[in-house]
Image (tube, rainbow, N blue to C red; front, top):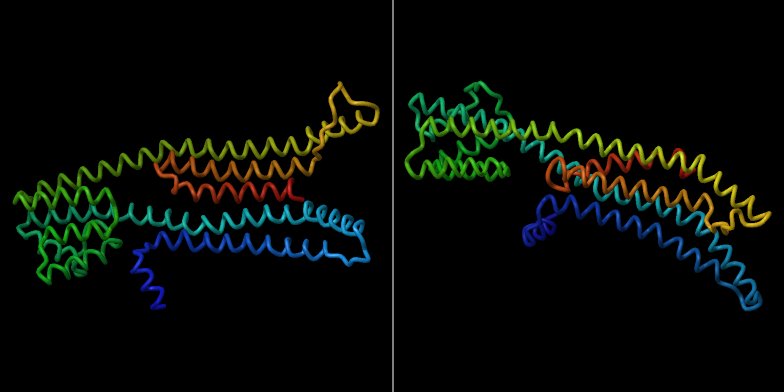
Length: 328
């Protein structure tokens, strides 16, 4: 445990790196393990004794190749899907929870600024006002449950003689919100210039509240595009179902019938069968699900990593649909 902590501190690893890299490593190991037994089995099966001769080696090799095509490759596709889910699911959940936590910090920070402006208007100095807000005996008009540990830390820093500017900057850094960092810098700069006042704090709170309202309106407006992306995936699943169940079997039967009595319409019969199409359709569904989720995150959140949770959901839906009519 101590060795892991030393590595963590030495290479400046972040929690996001561990959440992303560790599941990815597990996924790679899972894929490698699933590949190795097939290769070893193939090498064992193609072995022969000198008395069996060349024909025996050829027959065994052909049988092993057929079995590998029918079984191992199909299973490998499923293993890869599960490996991708293992690799991205923990990170997607962490990204989602981090966003929700930061958003709650931002909403409660508005209440903190309102309380701070009221106490400054009442005659308290900024440091005493922060200690008053952090006091468990004081009930604020707005809930500050998420900010409570950070406020207590700020009050402890004040007891140690830390300045108001350092306390505000340290609190904003611990919240890890780019938006709050901008407003904290504004308050710190005003304090250094000696212009800190209830009016400035109140103006900052009002402006932050309006900014968050605009963010909420933007997210609500972009939900329509998320619906379109999800609907497109369901439409693709429906089209593949129709192709797999009606159109392709009819076309392949037509070519098969035509081959027995000559080529139909002068077109040579295709070498592919329905099973090959099913594998291709499965690949299309999974790849499109992953890419659509990334696009959804880029559109709605402005960052592709926020789309990983949509990718997980779409991959699960597509895999369930594939189990119903493609991977039987």
